[in-house]
Length: 487
Image (cartoon, rainbow, N blue to C red; front, side, top):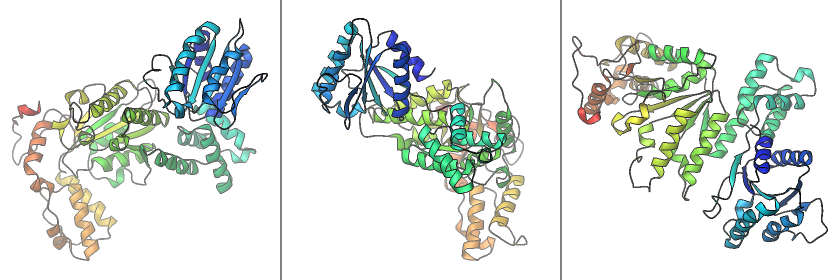
């Protein structure tokens, strides 16, 4: 439903207090002005720079005084008409008890003379006195059709528009931008390359996410060919994301000891399936003001939805929500975690979520229940075949002679193989000598690794072969006793 349609319903139902959350005030005002013209409603606007603006100025409008602006809306009232006053960026004045009281009284008085107060702001910051008096409407970001219209309006010649297939990639890149940001990106692309391309749009989009401080964008060159092993996990995600239609993939939860390739897999997945990877740092969502953390969480999830199709990555999720369920932070982390769980379960956008974890004991059981993820995979230490592929990749990457003897690597992860090759190149020493500086995590944290393997056996999918993961032993497979404390 568009902003105009929602406003029309609310005004016809005589909602006398409406808060519009929007970063595009000019576009919102144009839609509202068009609606008022069609319905023959009186419209006035106020901002701190221009003061009160209305079609009829036969009386003192109070200039830039916010209190006078609130009271002036009653002068627009007619016996059988509707009057609307739009207050731009009015959240800046809600620390004043006088203004809060004036808004409260005017919202109640508006029921008698059909005067509507509309606050237009990029954030929702309602004081407790006004929470029950205002309805909140979100001004949605432009759709793909609207972005396509903007692109056609910017490109004055047919040669400046990309072919249909490239236009789809441009629109994928532009999803999540405001109308002004899209116009700027398309214009800059024309200046640089003579036609609209997706590369410039992605560049500006990365800058937009950096400004928000909530998400970061990754678009690297590495695909699955740069990642050894994990054949079952790769196949599962490729098939899930290749489906088109009503059924959409939700995501996967990756569990493993450190260094087994969880984060690298997520980055490679984006390149492999042609989607951007958005990394959500939960720590960046925390704010110092009451309610700020929850609002920043909602904002980040809205951005992710707006940038679909994409891959959303939350690394080391058990650390991100470590305080969920506790009282050390007055329940802030628990509320953020609840918002994220609700979004995981209910979001309809084409977002593939990849969460990684090193310690399953810190995750609440509801996090991994069905329909939040398509699968929970355990990434074990690489097998012999996978290690051979990883050695081959990093020997080539760091230009190490293939005839060099490899060190013994019974408990090594992919990260430790990379570290050995990098140190050999950095120190200009053979692999055997570089290996003396590498201590595997399976040695330094053997107990926790064994405990994690035991928990995952029979409970998680294997990343190496289809089906459930079963802990590997030196001989035949044996039944692993599960630690009841992790149930």
